Picture (spheres, helix red, strand yellow):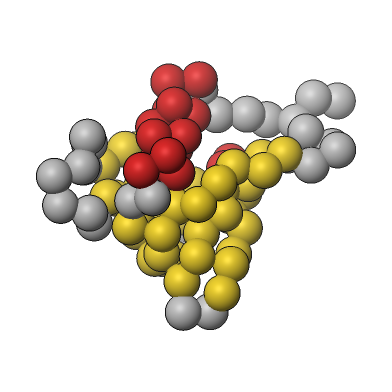
Length: 84
């Protein structure tokens, strides 16, 4: 069975957020909100993808398929909000 993945275009926005180190607010499908600096995308051996966020709690990994919305808090960013 293949793991669900997000659309390539949406993946590109996450990569841009990491490349520029944007401060982001993530709204998950369960309505949980996580804020922090986008750092990296990691992939497990099972092909699950996670966005690495750094905030006061340290580094957190958020599985990409759990994202509902990503809001960019950094001023003058290349984009403001993406809905998954």
